[in-house]
Length: 534
Image 1 (cartoon, rainbow, N blue to C red):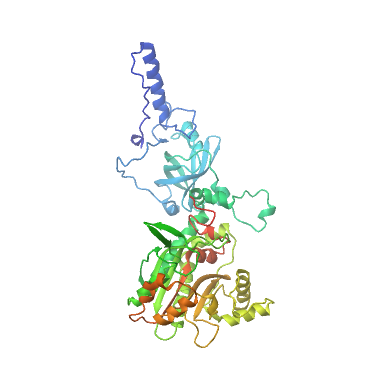
Image 2: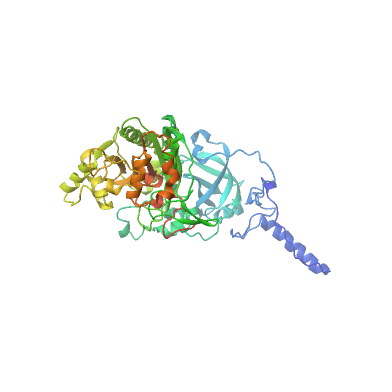
């Protein structure tokens, strides 16, 4: 391993003729610097040198920067695979230093790979020098290291690590990439369990949200965050796999458009050559055009932009949309049932296949397990209004639900039906977009629906108007410029099947499934009215 290190080149830049004494002095300084270069770098303060008396010479130090100059034959083991089955075997790890603690002639370290961790022991012995142990104790937290060590069974479980039954006794240790000595936040602080009485617990060091988001690269290393974004990836995978199995085709739609897709003002305007364009509020028009193009069932996963100055726990100006659209034969409930079953299949997939990740989140955030019915609960909008009225809330049948009323309704439904997921059907036409099909049997209702998790909306959908003349009439009714969406309306002039669909916010689904309190916890690099970095 020592062959992988090289001394730091030192040049004094002086080309003048020098005296013999001066040359001899510089030679000694250079030799000393070369020795120190193997165990000392910018951020590791070590006051010992690897000299001939160091029995561990060549077994530890700072690796030269890896520039792909050679291919190594080393085989590395993942921390999650370190079990008692590997006892007494020597293995290589590439890992990150989580914590270290020097005690006498030994140094205890905890190292991580993503959400997995194991204890490392370096102790002075016939093969490990005191210089080696001191070097280990001075490595800065979060540095990346290559460690060779023997897997040993521990006499008692190590509760602070995921690998509780084994530890590694160091044989070699090389620093691959050093972290700064001063970190903007500590992983152990950012990983502390959030308790109901935290405000009264002065000993519990908390990291506030802005500090986390300003230093997101470090914050994302916590076990809970590692799990959250693996679960988010799982939701995308399940969404894709479930719909593909149902015969849907994944499409990709433009994000630069010539007119607001929802007909509203909450759009970002961008310079587009000599004119202007808009960032898409949804893939709505293009999903419908794909149905008109005979794709029958389509879905898309992509960025959605909303220029809403909403600084709430559940709003972002850019989020990931999971959108779907489907042709049906005679009734839009054919589509509602497909969407509902897609959700229940996703929930089952998360519950059955991602228990470890869910448990990791629950270690930090105390939440109740997510409950759902299969098939999902479906209520009509007037029924929901009646439930709110019985609870003393004055709300009309033609009104949209406010956020507080949605949350109250969620609690009422949970108490009555024991489910965190449900569908509200037949929303008032007045609160829906121009392309929503009115209910033919009602003067105020529409063929539209929202879906909820823990009392918060995560999908908005409807039967779309597929008749171009009727669509034009509704466009004018909403005061939208027909000319700006002429291509969209024209898509229905050549025959289009009846269809319906919906749009889902990925970050909201993950936030509410896990019972988290803020959508910024489920957005890797969130964008809101006050945040455009990192």
